[in-house]
Structures are given as C-alpha cells and as structure tokens.
Amino acid sequence: MARGGRGWGLKEICIFSKKILAFHIAAAILRGVAEILLRYRGRQIGPEEITFLRQLIAAHRQLSRRRLSVLVCQGWNWFQPNGVPRDMVCRGLLLALHRAGYIELPTKRCHPPNNAIAHRRVKAMAPVDRTAIKGELAGLGALEIRLVRRTEEEGLFGYLLSQYHYLGYSRPVGEHLKYLVLAGPRPVACLGWSSAPRQLDLRDEFIGGSKEQSRRSLHLIAYNTRFLIVPWARIPHLASHLLGRIAWRISADWQKSYGHPIYLLESFVDTERFRGACYRAANWICVGQSNGRGTKAPTRRRTCSIKQLWVYPLSAHFRQHLLGATDRG
Image 1 (cartoon, rainbow, N blue to C red):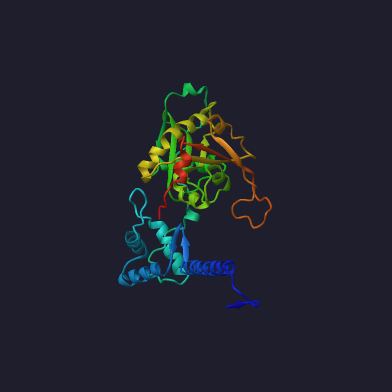
Image 2 (cartoon, helix red, strand yellow):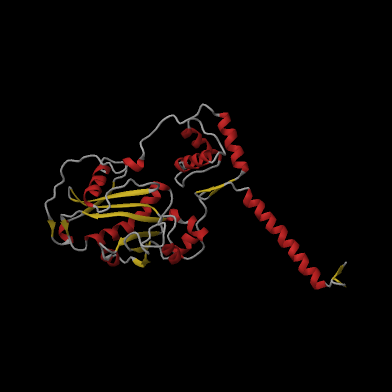
C-alpha cells in the first residue's frame, strides 16, 4: 500500500485504526439514540416498548385508558416505593405516545374536571375565629401539628391558604403532605410540602454531582410550597419554631406515606415581600437567589420577583444519600 509515494509506517497504521474504531463506536451510539423514540419522566421508550404497548392495547380493547395504564405498570414493574402503581405518570406517557402517533388509545370514556381550573376552587367554610392571638410562644401551650391530607380538616387547610396566603391555594401534584397547626382548637399555621422542582440549578450546585444524579434524587427532596402563619396570630419566633418541629418529623411522615425518606428540604423566599428571617433562625442555608426570569421566560429579561433559595439538610450525610440514589423507573 502506498501513500504519497511511500509506504505506511506503524504510526500511520495506528492512527488510521483508531479513526476506524472511533467511526464504528459513533455509529453504534447513533443507532442507540435513533432507537429511543421518547424520554418521559426518566423512562426511555424504544421500538420494543412500543410493540409491547400495541399488543397490550389490542388484547384488551374493552378496557379504559385508566385500566390499561395499570396493566402497563404491572408489566413494566413500574411502582412507587410504597407499592402503588405509578398510574398517573403512566397515563401521561400513554397520552404522549398516542398524540405522537406511536400507539392508538381507546376512546376516552369520561371527562373529569380540569384540575388546572378546579384546583383553586375551595369550599366555603364556617367563619374562622379571627380574634387576635398575642403573647410569647410559651404562652400558647402545646401546639398540635396534624397531617390533614385526606382528612376532614383538609378543607380548612385549603380555605386558610386561599384566603390568607398571598399565592392562594393550589392543589399539589405528585407526592405531598399538608400540615395544619393548632393552638387548642384554633388553627394558627399551615405548611404544605411537595415533590421538588425538576430543574433547579442553585440546588444542584449545592448538592454537587451530575445532572443524572440530580434527576434520580428528586424524590428524596421536599419542597415547601406554602407556609402560612394566620394574620391574627402574632407570636414571636412561631414560624422558626414550626420549621424546626416539622424538620424533626417530615422524613418519617414521608416514609409512612410514600415508602421512602427525605434528606433535604428546600423553599423559595420572595425578596420583595420577606427577608427569610424565620428560615435563618431555624438554621436553614441560603444558597443563592434566582435571576427573576422564572422557568418559562421567553427572553433573558426579568419577568418576576427575585427569590432566594433556602435549604435544610436532614442528615449529615445527605449528599451521599442524594448522589447515591437509584433510578425509580
């Protein structure tokens, strides 16, 4: 073999061989990427999954979309840590594949109310006693912190937020807990917690690790979506006291409800309204502030208020727990 009038040396042959190997590796990677038709909530869907879904739908044409999603969860062993099928996530995936033309779902049989519209509708409640509660924290007596999700008091929780929280009440999606705090028979505070936002650079930088590790650990982080001290309760240090008490119990409560613990708490504080004093007093850590563009800003200009991100580790080894989290499927 000749090249430029001379034979190939060992060096040229090694370089050429490396280029051939790199070409084949790149081609294999591209073939793998081409077989991934859709990524949804961490699950990759390729031709084998599409074939399975089409055969399942064809074999159970009499079933509703909801029943089909349960069968899919069983077939894929797709369950929450507490053993409940990931039905709502699966239904979202099936609908996305249906709209993309990969599968054909049966005709929709029922039309439940749109939660995006209905979640702000809160049932009217009997008038709440707004008599001022003043004095020192010790003078309140024993405060009772109740988990009220799926209880008769859940309506009161939503009503108080809708009336007295500046963001109002919005129905949580996914894993969440609702705490109602009472001094005797009277409510004095509400705290809502939910699954962590999927993309939060400040938090991810604080924890460290890769984007993939951040995605896998989201279920181990609880986000404080609402915190209300009712306006007629004027008790110094009440807010920081409640943050401390919730921190002691929330992981166990989450474990009982969803089958896994929590290792980090997080919350945003609107700097145009608050100073974050109660979080600081409760030993939370401020890790930075937002740029004011929100998550869906079409431009790089500021569109909303600046918010500080505060976090509270629940374990001295929280980073190891979060970075070592396994994929939930």
